[in-house]
Length: 203
Image (cartoon, rainbow, N blue to C red; front, top):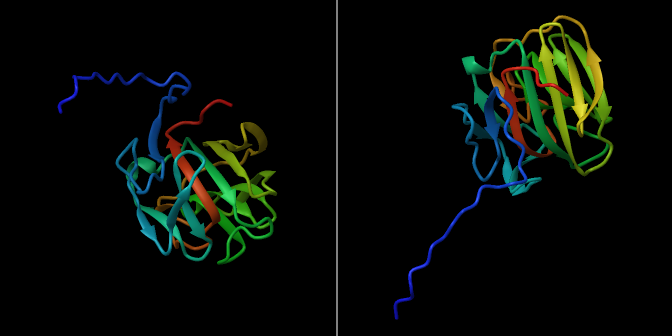
């Protein structure tokens, strides 16, 4: 028996903030490595899997040579930028099972990462700017804004550290979850909703 015709109306969400201008990469990790904001889709390296994320699904890394490799992309070689990412540690004592520190989002010589003790950092060449610490296994929002004269690290929306030495992004491969150049120091935990902007956002 045929039913009567029905009409489905999809209403726009009323609880999401508008996306700030300058968004050039966004990897929601909804079962794939697609960049939903740009053209920088990635490739899974190692035993990356998917699990329940902060929103929908997320990347799950075991800290031993896992990464989402984005390769070399000229539109990601920026002098002013913002990176934001949701992270959840698997351990409060190690950030990577493959050595010392984890890179959550890295350009190789530059990267947003986490030391074993939970301290966040932005590496610019040989120098580190440190921020707040993640000392539990809950989801946290991490961000860094970078300009040619310095950087600011945010944890859960609060500025927790800054450095004022000259900045520059090394022209090399980019990765989520590990070093961009060697894909080493991979994160031991979960990563969700990674995104990058072509400017330093306000606090």
